[in-house]
Length: 433
Ligand code: PFF
Image (cartoon, rainbow, N blue to C red; front, side, top):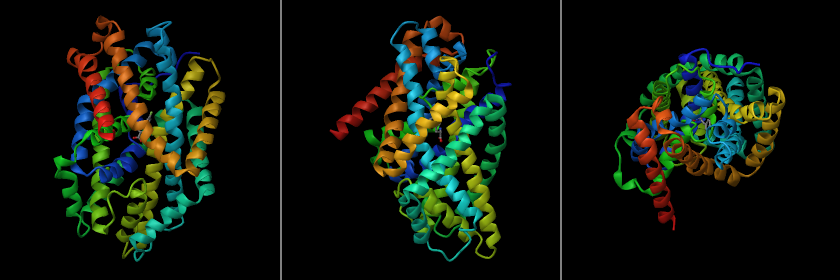
């Protein structure tokens, strides 16, 4: 059977942006900004996204597009009978680890959509503490967590078994614009809350004394996480691109869309966090404690508004999460389909099973959840990205690479990016030691 491909550049960009834009922007970015001191973190994040992530994105996509194969096969083809195939295999295992803890948060989104549908966020007199207690109860109930996680994974299963064009492409095209409009509306509301200005200052006035090796590693890790880099997902999606599509513009557009969503999420959440007197460093629960509070006060005189906005918002968050999580699932599935010649349904079931078991463990242990959250961005994705850059910059033939990748970007990939990543790793280790 002929391998599937994206119809054109727009659908390829939409699918990649769909993978990039997700809980990383809406849930993780605001809480990381809150934990790492606001504007200074954002500044490092922006620099990393533009100068490090764009070239890495293009390199990773180059490997997939030039081979039209997913991770394992792509490395085998470009560097036959070498250790590089283990990098390919690693990037089959990594998305499974991410998807496991990501599905826990995906499950929370599903639970919050359910709460919105049952009109839980319409009481304008509910205090911020009361909303915090609702989230605490959800996290505290392990069985409920596993049930929501299962629901979220079943949705992924449905999309991925439908295949690339019927499932993933169609899905992404509808949901991303809805999310965008809703988030912009929330920004305006959030900015209008009394006391919101302190939140805006927090986002735009950097305190440079806050920048250290750990903040840099976290900001860089967040940029990698948000752009789905170093995991084989961008590689796998790029393998579905047509030969004539341009990698550079695809990369640049994807990064722009992704940054836009992260910044919008920051401006939607932080002003409200300050207006409500919530602690910005509250951690992974931040959006789940803040947003319902925003929604319930929004409809003070008109509860149907609270309910309507909450339902639409959590539907869109769920969809954003799904377009990202299906890309992780797809990276694992593509390995079994391409390399092991397995039927798509069976391959999806295997990856689903692994994620379900590991994800359930993350539901039961908050420590395991936190560990996977940090491990993926600070280590697995950063390290994976480093390997992709070294592979394209040092292992592949320069003349071949230069046919698709412009010279200045190639220079960055070969020299600057490996050095920056290694320097930040070392400075982080020294700081910790
Ligand atoms: N980029 C996604 C987000 O921001 O939610 C998360 C993600 C997707 C990470 C795919 C890794 C990945 F391979």
